[in-house]
Image 1 (cartoon, rainbow, N blue to C red):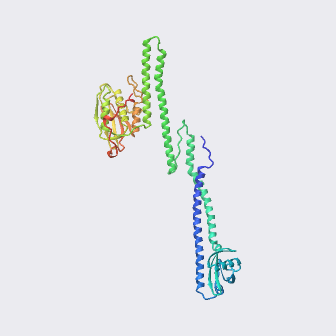
Image 2: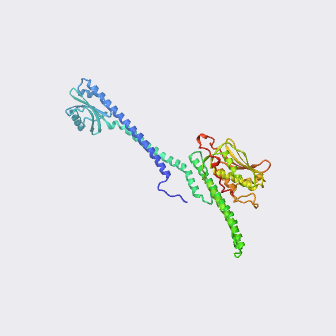
Image 3: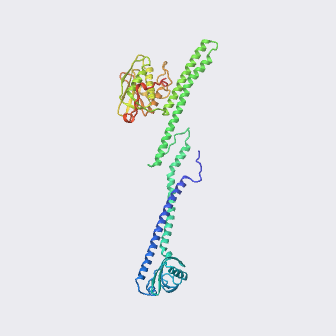
Length: 471
């Protein structure tokens, strides 16, 4: 499946968001810097005007003499006015030319007449700040150009904006490269996922580095491993079921074809054989259904008293004819799990031991425990299982013996193994002293020993016997 085309890729959206955040940060930083510098410049100008007014107030000179004594700066000018007439003004240059700006002079005269001796006015050179003080012969007024005072601030703001734009371009270029490297594992993941088919589940990703993307790659590889094992298990199950179904179908069909409809005895024998084969198919289907439920982890969870469970299994196994049954040991621990499924698995081991052990041979049931697990076992004194063949015992439809008289679907021990694994444990096979085999279910304790955090353990009489998978 080819990847769908999108108007804007995730890479572009991520880079756009990154650049947007960087741009917003630069705008905020530049704006705050500009406002702080602007307020500082205006405050300095206001302090200069206040100092000028204080100087005039303490002087006995005339307005014109005071103006002549002032040394103007590049951004300010001083003049003496009386009724809109300019009596004297500081030279320009170096100072600000304010004496020849009649509009400003008229505005100053109106402001002074109205009693506004300080403030801001418009002039031909832009907005200005002014301060007026009464003196002999008129008023002395100092004017400061706001635009000229702000020239350095404006120049620094332009420099900042140019630098910020260049940085933004560099961040964009570097970000494009970095996001490309960042998304490359995801692109490989997408391409790998697109290339995987049901016929080829062996493709895997190579993890690079030690970050979240590498962890994702490892997780995906693990998921693919589980998927491959699941598909392989399903294929194997289907192959095994197909193989197992062929035999009864062939038998029933062959007898039906060879049956003489006119012979009642032959018809009855064929009928009985067909029913027997259908019963075997029913047991096979039930076992497959049980195996599927267990492998799907469809188990309940409760706290189980292992000693009581041992007695209950021994009581149920005692109904199997042909062998004397006894309890050898009882573990005084509790485990967490599905009691019915554990009874089912333990009884399957007992049934399996009874099938393959000579008549009247004793079979022991017992349970032990250590710091990590409870061990539920069945010990027989039969022919035993060769070590080289033990890995086959828990396979589906795999029997070590096909002699007549041993009935079953071939799934019983597979179900036992699945139940153990569903509880986080496993099965093992050992030798019985003096000859025979010991089958053991190893079930982790998993914290079930803490009585304060767990409900009341299951009593022996509460365990329900389930024999669906003992065929």
